Length: 195
Ligand SMILES: [Zn+2]
Image (tube, rainbow, N blue to C red; front, side, top):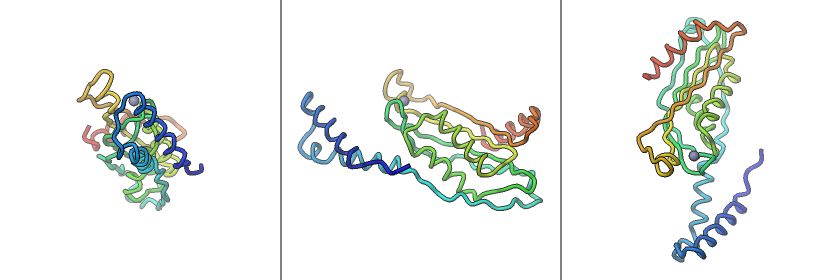
């Protein structure tokens, strides 16, 4: 993936502002001169892909039965349906396989920020985080819960300003699907998330 052409994006933004101004006379000179640049800077900051190296370590044998949990990971994203913000907290848990892999705890937060840093929808973001963690960690179990507040619902449309949307994704890394064990692990993760 190549970097977006930010000059082109800023030019189009300028065109939009000029159309709006022509129709509605909303902007003063300073805004006509600088708002397109500021908006583009905001997109640039929000959509910077935040790639990082996901380093892993061998899981210590004594810890193979402990779930690793990071909760309350703050994220800011932008709804790809309305191009306005949604934001909130993500909670991530995984259980390494026996003699499997673990990662530095900050990598879990980085994984959330990476998938938030693009025009997004919350369901897709939740699944992308779970899929990439499972791919990188080859874990026994991965669970991701995202709680998001969407400005497209808070400030427009139905104007539900207290609603929080929750989405979850579970991945299971064993060939044999043990429903009972998966449910036990899900319950444990939810308890550790404090949900
Ligand atoms: Zn939206």
